[in-house]
Length: 630
Image (cartoon, rainbow, N blue to C red):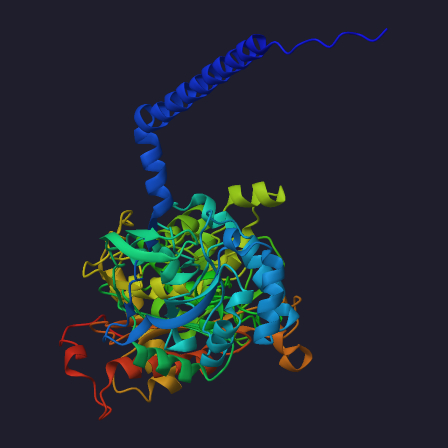
């Protein structure tokens, strides 16, 4: 039997619909309340936070690197300046796959794989987020055009105009002024991250490094408005950077060139000082190099050639070259003997051509194997008599000898603003015991008296010895900067003057050095005879390889680089010194024959006018000098 059909309950259906509508309406109201509450939280409670965040997305603070200070020689000739240049920079965060972008750059500019490796190394160096990294400098017009045409393939890459350090004098000041280079990761960790924002180069050597804080200046800032792609729309606020201070060197480009010409392409160094002020007038280390190669990054091949050259062009011989001073140290040893009372100017020593310690058979040879007979102090300096100074060193002893030579700056840094300087070595009993676990032997004192043995000096130290004799012991540290931002440098740690019990001893030593140049028996009289002014000088020869007892020096049996070094120190005019010079020629052999003419050429360039006469400002006053002794 079929089921009866139920009639539809319209009232029930209506009630269900009403209930559903109510539930839906309540849910909608609740969601609206939540949305309003959220909007209130974001727009009212967190208004400051989100407005600041929004502003930061629109406004960015960009650093403005300061212009690096310029460097001039004493006559105003530009030694280091800043040259406009176009560089290619990449911001890694905006480049996406930046390694692929580098491949595109190499392809577009038709560069080598070596360039690609260099670019990647620069990109991987430590840097700040969103900071553009320069990867290629000094773009040509063709390269700029190629980048512009392929800009759509190079996200995060842009061509930027900036100032790049340039050294117009090239090799002339490479070892004194130094150069700047890219900031590496180690330097980035110790630099002020704020002041060096936007700066990619820093002083690496020489004046550029020592005066880096002054040359760099203070960073500036500008607030810029950008769009979503990071493009700058307008500048909202700007704080200008403070440019670096300019530095005027005490060096003279003309004297520098004259010194280089006098060296004649030989390996060696020359230092010329003003003994009255400590100013470095010329500083030559040959061979040299072009510092411009290092500014924007030197290539691997070019650097390898400089680094591996047997002539070591990167090596600063003036400050880091360590050489036995040879007989150039004898004036300082003579001062030690006079002031300690061990000898007087009239003390004589008989020279048969050698010296022997009491109760020892070993003979310490004089360079003149036939001997000079009986010699006093001035004659010993004039003839560079080894026997006299063997005897003097023995009488002094290592302790007194070391103390006096240390007062002349041997074994310590003497400069004011040359951070690369080596202190050299002034040996002592304690030093030898710590180094070799051996006692000090009397014979080692003897050879120190003639500038051989363990003693190691730099050419700068020898120039300072000459300057100290010239100005009678007044200590003024040698310095390269004449003024920094118009202010002369100040020595924070001055050396004590060498004060002698009898100040007349300086004149006695000076007279002996003058006889070296102007007495017919002086070791450098051939050079002194051609001088129109009076010179006080001292030659020296430093052994590179030892010679056995009883053997003679034979240059034909030695490799050229094993031959003796030639040294010479001098100051002039002797009566009122205006220049002190130290010359060192590697493997030059003859201090008097090879190094002395170089020293005279440098002094001539400084003291003589175009007419070959002594310049008026350098003419010495008429004063009584110590009597010359034969």
